[in-house]
Image (cartoon, rainbow, N blue to C red):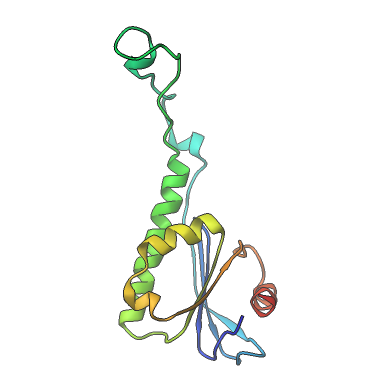
Length: 151
């Protein structure tokens, strides 16, 4: 993938954000950290106090046959990851409107990438030059550079 000089590279997942700027050129990347953020997000079981509830229609009687099922559980951990992705998209909108970057590359796991796409503002979409569906948030910068060059 070509990463133009001075392009913003955002590496994110549901709880980590790494903003990098390419100080090199498209052939020889030199990514420098601009911003780093770690958002606390405890595991789902630590965010719940109750077990899932049972729907009245699953206990017999009523208009539905009894299935003995429960209502779907809310995954608070996933909700928080989705909220963080929306916050990242909002931050990118602000940066784009300030003309902080002309080119943008996003690197994120597929689920996070999908959530980010839901929230891209037109000012972000217009500057988006590429996306890489990989989780590289725990990788050192040289590994991120290699992954982008081979994509």
